[in-house]
Length: 365
Image 1 (spheres, rainbow, N blue to C red):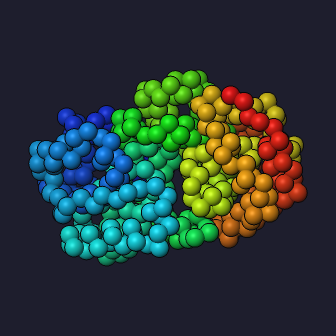
Image 2 (cartoon, rainbow, N blue to C red):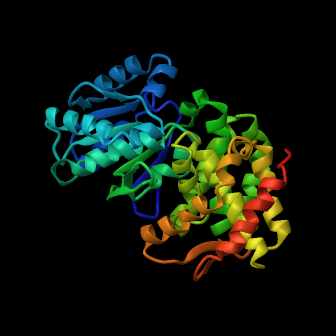
Image 3 (cartoon, one colour):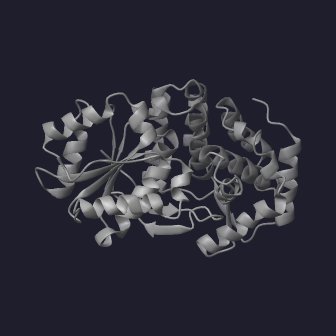
């Protein structure tokens, strides 16, 4: 068992609903009860693509004395469930109320980042907050979203506009769930490792570079090693908000059609190039990060985002949204690998120049 920076248990386990008793022990240790009570909220994609998942869960809870408070809530995930005027979130709220879930019970959220957000948002509202255990099923969720201290929904034009505090009671990471994700979802997730490595830990970036080829081949061991390394870094240093402002804006400008992982990788590329242009970062350090993204085809989203990148003024409005979100005009950047820095305010003309350079210079893997 590891602890993240907030003190929540983080477990790494293969086949969490198989022979392992890790989930059952975690729930029982959190409650002190021999028969903890849960309501499952799951991503439809996970349910459909994981053979026999329902039967495995049924056998698991029966074997380990876990009580199901009601029928599982299965939601068709994707960013649309965060921007559907609370329809999906209220579906979960209704299920929690119908199941008479108390603050001694748990929501067991099984899915990618959007599912974790919707389930967390709903759980945070019911009876002042029902505890949530996160089982992330996408690489990006395993590297980043599962550690979030809040749950958020989107408005029509603003990514994560509605936020509530929502830290997990526990996180269980089972990389086998990632076997069924689409290639783009897998590829784009490497940006989370690069982002944290560049902003916080040079050793993590070095490990990410070493594992990049194996990760590109969708090797589960590479994902597992990265996820555990990220957990260790977050335990010591926490997370990072580096290279996020443009990601949210790109997603909203695309009508939430641009996958989150691709948006993060583009945002990372933009802020690295900006750091170089501002004289904060050596180009060779940026090239190290970009090389990892290229190896994993994580910048493939650029091909489909030219029209978004060309909307310079609209995209730079993301800086205003960032200022409103964090309460400051300061922008987190990097002054070297693993060396975070902050600038008092963004130079919009410089960002515009960087955007034009990225658009005019094709990224070749």
